[in-house]
Amino acid sequence: MTNASEPMVNWAELIRTAGQRHAARIAIIDSGRSISWGELDAAADAGAADLLESGSHRGDRALVALPSSADLVLTLVATARAGLVAVPVDPHRADLATVAARVGARLLLVADGSPEVAGVSTVFAAADLRRWWTAHRAPVSAVGGGEDLAVLARASRSYRAVMISHHAVLAAVAAATGAPGSRLRADDRAVMALPVHHLAGLVTAFLPLAAVGAAAVFPEVDPAGGDLSGLPSLIRSAKVTIIPGSPGVYRALLATEGVERALASVHLMTSGAAPLPSSDFSAIRAVTGQHVWEGYGISESTSVVASSLVTARSRAGSVGCALGGLEIRIDSGTGDAAGDEPPGVPQDPGSRVGTDGGVDALDGNLADVTGMGDVGRISLRGATLFSGYWPDGADGPGEDGWYCTEDVGYLDDLGELHLVDRADETFTVSGFTVYPKEIEQVLAAHPDIAAAVVGAVPGTGSKPARVVAVLSARAGVERPGVQQLQGYVAARLPIFKRPTEFAFVDAIPLTELGRQDRVAALGLAGFVAGGRSVAVLGSVRPTAVRAAQPESAAAAPGVDSAVPSPDDQDATADPTPHDADGRADAEPFEPTAPERGPEQAADLDSLGGRLPGAGNRRARSLSDDDDDLFGSEYS
Image (cartoon, rainbow, N blue to C red; front, side, top):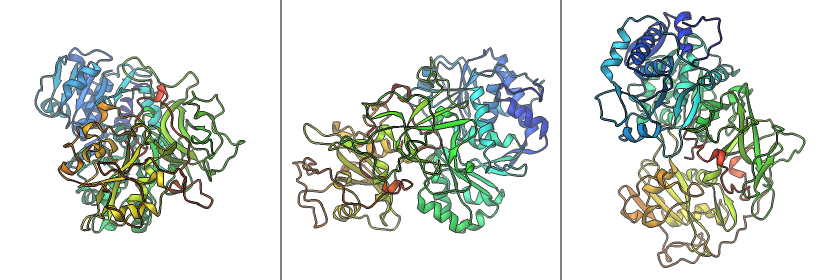
């Protein structure tokens, strides 16, 4: 057993230390049951012993498919203590065999039943977990640690899994707890609104509580399922003091009658997984008198990279500054296809973030480290970074320690990071780079629109790409028509950014962290049907696109296609010719934005239309996707 005075090398030692220092304090409240840190530590010993006695060996992969709960926490601690590599996935997945084969899993830990999974020699189910909670076993010394692989994140995705070491987990927890504004207390209770099978729930929301002996409160319904209806009453009844959330969490809270009473006990609210809309940011402040502190991170960084908890105040649109031990720099280009600089972005060549050499050129567009204010790729360096992609650790941080992400952002004059969009989700219309988030924000500001997702149908021949939009209407209102939408965007966007096709769905699909799922939304609306592949990610990863609905968007259930016909125009719409199928022929698009005054660098809405293009994706960040932590609401 590890001496508490010795430096930790295995992240399960966080629970060992909490079990020793805060043995009687509540660690978990789940379905009315209270579990102390001492009980969690002892149960993890029983689990680790069982795992080791099953014939498992250090480094074996254990596929964990459990709801976000006390059992999931216990299982993850036990696998780490036994020296196994946890592969946590959404328990609702039906393709466990595929995931197991992808990572070569030898063990499976599930809530119910014993599914037949080829290659898996050992299965632990609900009965085994119940026994761990009550068994009395001798303490188990942690097996392995340091740079040993501890977690494979995103293994259920169609692209490469992220290799996270014990060292990275420990560094991420230290960085999160060291944020000046976190102010964790022993009597705190944090609601687990983020699923623990995701690094956001485990490393960002749960593990920091072990440092002070605070408690985690689990909803009765797994948040990965998207049902947050019971969250307000749980927060109130359990006297929750901390909400590590996402925009979806705050949207659900704001929709609850009496939300101010439900949040009366809360003293800290954080938001990640996507930028919090400024309207929700302001509404929460108006209701509670408190700020929501936003952050940013990706699975490749294990946890949070930047947070406004590091800054003196929380500002809408800012995700703050880098946590302790982490560095952020912007790797940017020189402008759009015409060679112009981004308008309104302050240039300060003498003020640079990071001084090492630049990154590989992206079609000559994104290269070299830039001055504060430039827009470009966000690059990271620090101890929390991953070890590379499974199985061989390829394409991890470079020799200089820097990792170039697929997120685009800029640093304002206070040094705070702002997110713009995903580099691989941008597209080009008539030679101009378009960031879908900007258009989505304009559409979502329409009084009758609840949410919007934007993509592009690639052009054919000499025709440029066409911008398309998938919308959901606010409850109780009539869906706006095509002419109204065309007039609305015509007054707010330059012509090459205006959607030429619209489709309504009942609700925009969300990821497990509550972020809008662009690929799924565009597929649901039929924009990927009939061979019309949508350039949502620059070039679509076919395996990442959900199954398309019937051939036409109009025929898809729950979808109301609003495609303008040649005669469906009004005085406010563009006099754009249409081809035979009624879709706008964007050939005559004139890439000229309406005249504007000086733009403010700190306002995403006014970043302008001529920002640097993404070019070809850099191999190192080919698989980076922030369906992860505190990034964009873009995947």
